[in-house]
Image 1 (cartoon, helix red, strand yellow):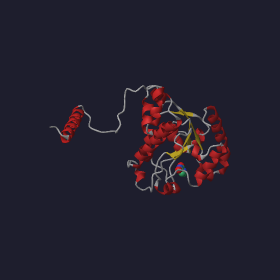
Image 2 (image 1 turned 90 degrees about the horizontal axis):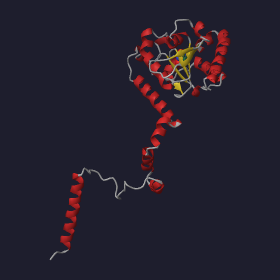
Image 3 (image 1 turned 90 degrees about the vertical axis):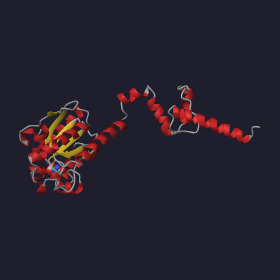
Image 4 (image 1 turned 45 degrees about the vertical axis):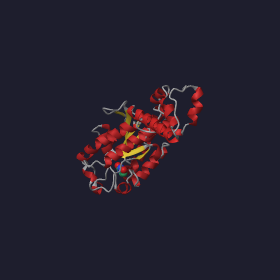
Length: 277
Ligand code: URA
């Protein structure tokens, strides 16, 4: 006569057979205790079921909905676009931190990558970090940086609203000018930085930066106050570019400040016409 043990054994064998069948069908993981219907109506009636799901599962379902994809591709939300810029800029900073192809990298204390907003409409490029910049790892934090902050403030730009970097990312020993080999080693990174930020206005600070950024052999006295178009092989559209006297030069030659302030007013006007304000 069959007893309760026989019934239990038969049940166990049935469960084991079912598990073997599932394994043979490719099931190799348990992801929940309750069965989920994948055929459930995806219309409004199921919305409350979606709302009851854990947060992450609900978001996955929503972003996978066919109508959600084109919206994401056509117009990324501002926070996401900002995240892309910041991630790209971080990648570039990390690449530079690992780059030892510029001879300045060895004597310098630290990398001076850049400072400000990676989504800025205005990018400024100086020549090379000095002692204070080398100590703090940020561009334009010494006396010329303080004057630069005042110059920017005079046209309504806070430091956090622009992005500032240099033609080389490490301090040349004794503050000597960078050599052509040093600037050449850094130039692809400067170019990539401008491509990533894709500002509306690009401003070179001083003669050496103007020569490199604007690709013009003229002196700063001839380049300042003029407008050029900056473009790289990969940039999507040309960027308005100009040059300003370097703040360190203005500290040494305060008589030239009048000209620099005139150039700043022209930059402010250009910002208004290019929607960079
Ligand atoms: N001068 C520059 O050109 N860059 C700096 O970062 C500081 C001073």
